[in-house]
Figure 1 (tube, one colour):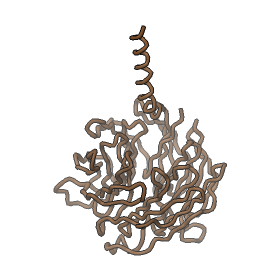
Figure 2 (tube, one colour; figure 1 turned 180 degrees about the horizontal axis):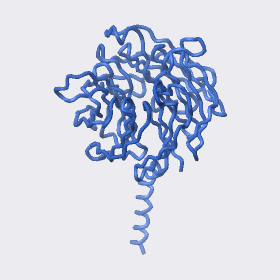
Figure 3 (cartoon, rainbow, N blue to C red; figure 1 turned 45 degrees about the horizontal axis):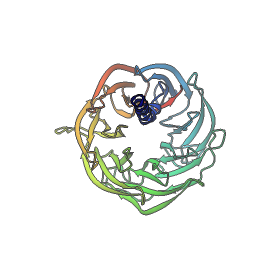
Figure 4 (cartoon, helix red, strand yellow; figure 1 turned 135 degrees about the vertical axis):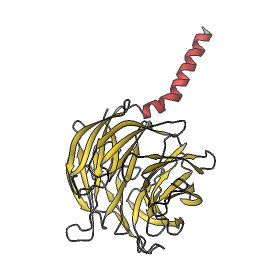
Length: 385
């Protein structure tokens, strides 16, 4: 009897250990929304149904017709989607816009709720703070950042914060002024970090979530190499490391991160390209795999995903492969919520290519699944079961 009780206790203990991970990835059915540029055949945001078990994508058609919805974010409850409208002029002002949509989880259709000025030309990135009450926007040509509160019905309110970046970099063609390209809050929501391609800086702000305000931290920024052009940033799941993909020099800069002070300490810069490549290239997106063992970055020109291993103790990177994206100009890519597949949006060839991820090696294996989407730029998943 004692043996039976001990076995039962062991089973319950093991269940309590593994259940959180199972619950985290329990969903199988998702919507995948695709943001695009609409200068050619695209009409706006497109939707797909995604089955995690098989990796199958099924087209649901045009979700919402709108202009240049180049980057998207979804609220934590999966009820609303927000898109930047990447344009240089909005209602007579040097600004783009941000549009709020309600999601029909059955059909994938989006219904517009309201639209507000982004407060800077060509907004190119949008993300939620960790409370899900504010969205943060980076305006590329405007060279500034803005924060917007969400109202109870999902509509956007007037901006609660705005910061104009100042200065320039060493590249006269691309860094003649500030170009904010990415902004997100840290895991504890105490800081907001903005990557500015024009300044070669990751600017660090203290974020106040009750008012949606930002103020410069001390120190106020971390630097990458002169002329590198930081574009996007990915944090390691352990919160101790952060990685900036640098567009202009095709590199990744790794930082150690002090969560108490919000200070980023540069520790390594490494190329995203294989040795001997001499063509033109611009990097675009960066993600760390949920298991924390691998980092991926996209190359536009070499048209590949750079695969790096991450040293567990130090966070240092080692380039282990460059995998063809089977398309032209890979912009954004996304790791599916189960961590088993990587989907690449090839902007200039107008397709999304699905790869299987080898969780042991970081290898990307083509599944053979390719879907046509005109000028895809951004991919976002929403769980629906």
